[in-house]
Structure formats: structure tokens, C-alpha cells
Image (tube, rainbow, N blue to C red; front, side, top):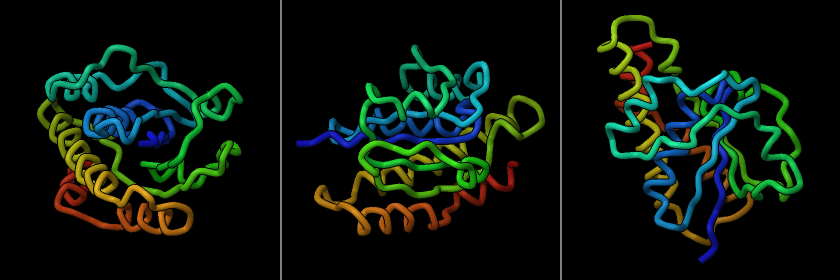
Length: 173
């Protein structure tokens, strides 16, 4: 079985992309390995996101906000799939990725942009987690041999599908 490397991109690599990396690594079953990065990374991951991951049983050691350039280097793991999870990163000029991986955009509201008390912020992160989890489960359900334009189309369809979690994340933001 070939492991597919998936890079989740967001502008700051502090919330959505890190949540997606953790979820995929927990659910990937050895078929997928998640990574995350950003175009202009923050100094550190969002503490509300890390707290949610820890509460859900995800290991959080080793998470840090990193630039996507790290994954365009010759010695970096080769990516099979690249998914942008925020609107800002979708429109930015990305590096040239070795191996020409399939790419898609899964626009998700930024939970770290939600202002309010701890319960309000927590609700936004829970909604984002649920939306990412649903989309990642759909990614994991794709046939193993899917490649090229068929893979890109399937990934784009996953990103275009709205759910209750999507609506909750948007209303929380």
C-alpha cells in the first residue's frame, strides 16, 4: 500500500490546517499522512485549536506554524495532494510542487477570527473541526487508485459540499 502525503495549506498555519493535519493523521489508517503549512505563518499554533485537539485525544507535541516553502524543498516529503483550507491561501501564488500533486480548495471559515468569550471561541473551533473531519472522512472513502483529473475533481467536489458544520462555522464567525 502506498501512503499518500497530503499538505493542508492556510495563510497562517495556526488553526484550520493544523486541525486538518491532526485529523488526517489520526484517521488515515496508514494510507494517508497529513502535513500543514502556511504562506505567512504565525509564531505559534492557536492555543484554542491545540486545546481542542488535546481534548479529542490528538497528540499536540511537535505542532508549530511553518512556511509552505519547507515542502517545496528537494529533501521534503513529496506531496500527492495539496488542499487549501482558507480563502486567502487559495488565491496566493503557491510554490511549484515536485511531482505535480492533485490540488483542491476546501474553503472553511477561520475559527481564530471569532471574537468572544471562551465558549464562543470553543464553539467556532468545534464547528471547524467537525467540518474538516467530515471532509477528511470523504477523502478517506475515495477509491485507492484515483489519480490525475479524476482525483482533482473528487477533491474539489468534497470542498464544494456544504454541511451543517459549514453553516455552524460560518455563523460562529
